[in-house]
Length: 256
Ligand SMILES: C[S@@+](CC[C@H](N)C(=O)[O-])C[C@H]1O[C@@H](n2cnc3c(N)ncnc32)[C@H](O)[C@@H]1O
Image (cartoon, rainbow, N blue to C red; front, side, top):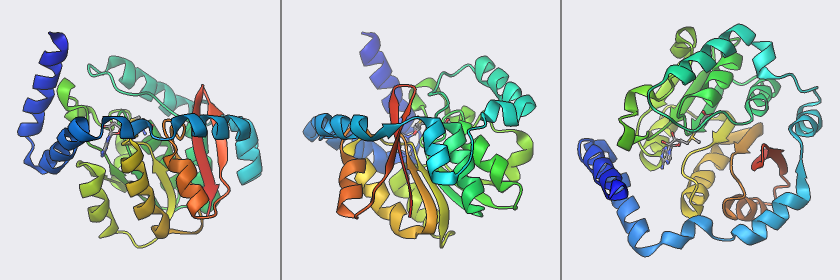
């Protein structure tokens, strides 16, 4: 009963947002005709990822030639404030990922332009903005939030007020947001992909983001072992990525 209520609430929330109708249509089609595609190639990729996975510390050393400095220590006061905001937030969303990887990627590229998909509380946005503020750069984010929980207003909740001037948040599904973002952005220094985790969604977004990433730019994708999209994309494009074992999940990263 509670599952039916949740689906009904989500549907109602979608119906109130005409800008999200295209995504609603895609979700309905996926759930009827293509349910298993989310996990396509998962077994093969788990073997691939496990065989090449390194620790966060090793990845930062290998890619950026730096020692791992926890973000929570680098910016301890702002980090503690963000943790407090997350704890007090009435809507529960996904938590922080490998923050140091995103921060160091922005530092390494001296990023002016970062594009990310998937914001939730805004941990990845917070760390990217913390680096971008040094150069007056801009973060472009895409998120289609937790509609069933009324979570719209809390997307990016932990991002400190003073960093928001460098932030453009596009509140649609990626397939609508990314074309809008590309209308404003020519070359990207850092990509962080952390939204739709279905095979087709990942493949579509990678194929849009990768050509716009500049040479020497950094591409990061979370949850690359949910299916084989990241592995297949890398193999197709002759990319040798690093896979990072982060708290039991795998993050893929490479420098273009
Ligand atoms: C794991 S969370 C992102 C966490 C965030 N990067 C952080 O570090 O705090 C995934 C987010 O992706 C969003 N999302 C899922 N599918 C999406 C889609 N097709 N388009 C845009 N956003 C999507 C969800 O609303 C959710 O907020």
